[in-house]
Length: 317
Image (cartoon, rainbow, N blue to C red; front, side, top):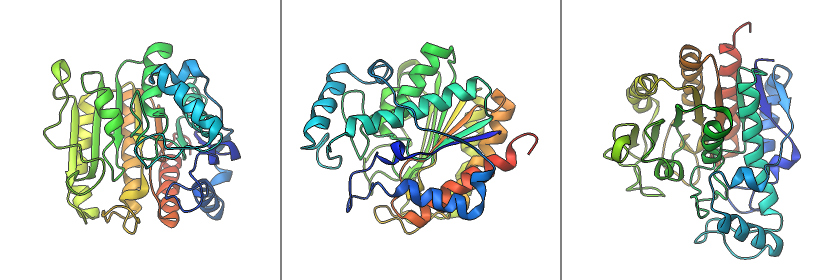
């Protein structure tokens, strides 16, 4: 199979209970739509894999990992300022997110697949030393560090179309010129985390290696397509060896906590265009991550659109 999708009960464990926007039912909402469309028969289904402490520590501070473990045992308190509650087993659940992403990276680099999608992943707010915005461990940051340390892949492109700015990734790599960062998000003046202004282009020697495109609340598909070519040019000019897409579905109209009005077709388009770009730049090696999205119908349609675009783009399909 050219396209690999991670699915299994262990991945669904990453969720904060009934009533929380990031509930445990998000994975099944996506998978039900995969089955309805018959897409699950056309992909390689990979089981979730847990990361160990050493892998997580490539990005996160040991003291923070230990704190997550402690609160995972008690199941009490918050891991940030109130958005990300601890629950019994939260460490293990978050470790499965990180490990599944790392396993997809390994599969892509071993040429076991052309493209891969991990639906419960893309936790782009977590900082090196703390949780934030429903995100316990930053699987993206861990993957970038692992690509460099384990696989010798230096030039990585990260594209984010979640409604929220990918601040945990941006600030961790703001001074890293080899991390090409392009983020279309709702203007931080109107939405958490309040960052990602157009003037934020990277620091020091990395100035100019980051592209932030804040969008007005209510921005629709026409607004997306007006700026998307800029993303493509920026990423292509960065000559990446590996491409990451954070395909958060909370930018789709009708999400309960954002104000964007994209249709799911935006996600399918972004995936299709990045598949073509990845073919030109790095022989495939595109890993998409589900990210946010709190309207279950929206995330199901947006994420299956990503998978469908990958299937259409894959050679020999």
